[in-house]
Amino acid sequence: MLQARRTRVVLVALLVAAIALITFDFRDGGDSGAHGIGGRLFGPVESLAGHVTGVVHGSTGGEVAALQRQNDQLRAELAQAQAGDANSAQLASLLHLSAGKYKVVTATVVAAGGEYSDTVTISAGSADGITANETVLNGDGLVGTVVATTGTAATVQLATDAGATVGIRMVGSGQIGALSGTAGSMTGGGELKLTLFNADATLQPGQELVTFGSVGGRPYVPGVPVGTVASVTTQPGSLTPTALVKPFADFTGLGVVGVVVSK
Image 1 (cartoon, rainbow, N blue to C red):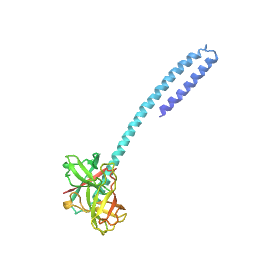
Image 2: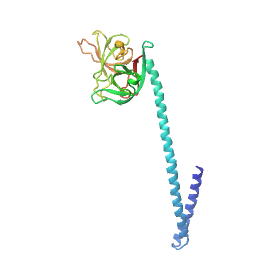
Image 3: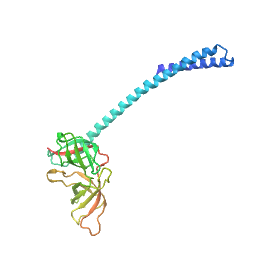
Image 4: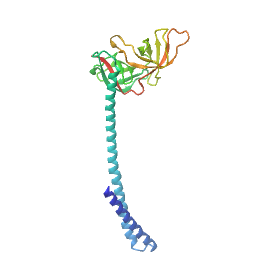
């Protein structure tokens, strides 16, 4: 930095001297020897200025850009590690299961599903102990269930898929029912359709739902938070109370998920 300042001072002094000599030569009609002196001074100064500017912008700019890239990469890696730790803790706290009966394999979503289904691909598979018909969740609640695996990856059918049906229990009242998805692709809607089995059951906005659980915990383990009732859609005279449910999980922003596997 000090060297750069000294260079600028020298450049300014030389430029001032060169301009003075050229001005003197112009007043003298161009016959003065100052014209040659000014040209000899100004030419090298212009060249030196261009050289110094190029060095400063080329070298310093490149180094700054490289350092910025490294800094951004380190920040991203730190954020990913922190998110992974936080999600692992959340996944563990979400499960109200018998001690020692289940474990959670964590993975990240690496791809969104096909045109006609609401699915995602995750970065863990059969080599990690994952098999089909296992519950998938994240730090917010239910995500879906595993439908296929390879050694290193698995396909997850999201709870929002039109072909997905989840048994649920209403928190508080204990009423049971079925929840189905409404989306045919990742661009579909995020609300789920709820139907309760008891015709006398009461539904109201804000009520929470959890998974009822399947036999052997496959494909759904019990007690996983699902969402809240957004609006009641029961028609007059209907034998089945119905509602639309807003899920806890954000299906358009899935990152770290957990697969519940039997030990």
